Image 1 (cartoon, helix red, strand yellow):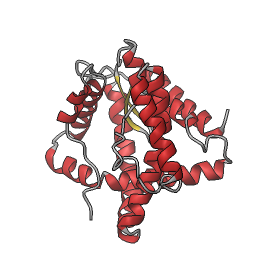
Image 2 (cartoon, one colour):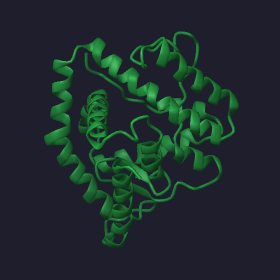
Image 3 (tube, one colour):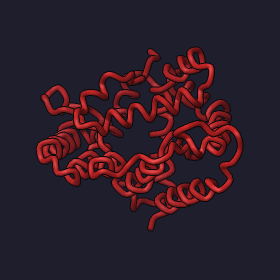
Image 4 (cartoon, one colour):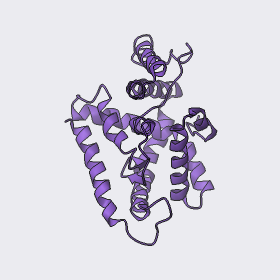
Length: 241
């Protein structure tokens, strides 16, 4: 087992063990782990404030927009591997075929995925993960769970951390390579969400509750028999120039 997968599993195990510490009067209906979740949410917030957000802001200022788009396309292309695997597990042959064609098309003509030729060619982008695969087979989402570093999740969706770490071409690479790739991916995604976090800080009196409710609503919509329902919920991406 590679280091990245081991670290992910260790994070999951630590979060589950902390459930025993989730006591107190902060619990609300539907969120039995709220005391623990708020503690981890606060930790993640400090880490974001002093490390992640400054790095993402610098990334936006230093890296030209076309390069940022290429980086985003590259990781989106890698994500089609997981989309293909999960659509296959969900017995969705049409979606799985489109995922495979997207990956093959962008990996070749798109120069390792840095250019997205598949979308203009009419191949739709799907968004699947192992949590949605479990939901497809009737596994309930379970209690809301905030993970250190990884953020919002649930007892069911925490499986995404371990599974996604395996479904990447870099899973067998040396740790230094994995860490570098993960770092670039993290900063790129955080830069895309700068607009969302600014809106969150202005609109929500209780940011924890707002984030929890939005996450659970979106996961419910994505696992709905009518996935178009997910489009009714806001999706925040790069709001910066």
